[in-house]
Length: 397
Image (cartoon, rainbow, N blue to C red; front, side, top):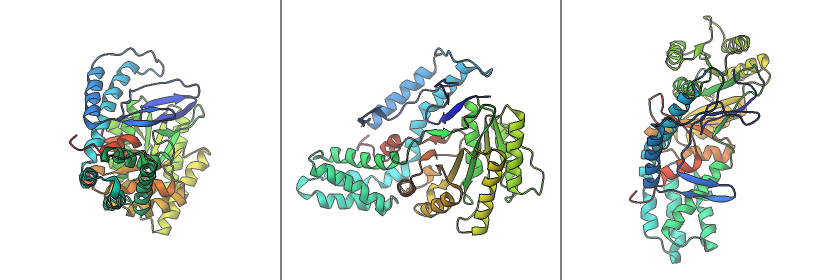
């Protein structure tokens, strides 16, 4: 059981305790270099691919691991997580291909960039952002940021304008707070509870299984809760994921209300004493169905009744193919249950990936993960700079 845990760091795959101790660590390679107080330096696509290959080579060799505890083979875990992180960047890059293809018009605009006619170019950039569902507020804010840089003389070439545009979007994403960590329970002997919510068909149960896989790779003991009592075979699907990821399934008697299922699961996890993370599934529900939303509020209250500090995260699964429709969903779910993070799914199947930036901009909720495929490893940590770099690679890269 991990004690005094402050948070799980999704970008690094670390459990970080109250005194800064690391239980399992994986190396994080990003597409940017970040220095406190200095703007991120963007790598070209070819550069990050070289670095990805370098990390893969490094991951094949055994590094020294000094962390101990919990009975885990931490050296092996560190190697597994390092390999996984090396693939994160490339998967996000590949997963954004449809949105990136639609944004290729940016290259055409910037290729003809002229300082004596930059207002017309900025209007074209704004229209391009609107075309991939960035939304009017985000498109305007991003181009206004570029305009300010141009007027201050900080940008004069098309390449510099591209970087200014990317930085404007990154600033919007970063303003929501830390998107690379999941807040967990700090109380020793108690599990951390993550409640996963969303509309029908967004991929909640599958996403929950992938989350279990990520936690399990760090050495965490996971309990999965079949809180979706409405959809046929939902519990069986979750049980399959539990078996695949080495998680335990909470007991769920038939004809039990979802609030009671979640209450009992948290109670069971507390009694066992060896469960680190409880992942609670919920039934998909339309955000405009007030009765079902009230039921979801009741589920959250049931969890809190058993463990007052829980849930420690409420993650909203949003289907990337819905575009700006996800904004209305996020508004309602956030108001009802206090969403703390977003998981964007099906990013690989949409050219409307920019919509999530509007959600972050309006509601101030950070994106925690993005789904870029059907595989168990295709739930990737969300890192704003890498995400934006994947959308706006340099021409010819």
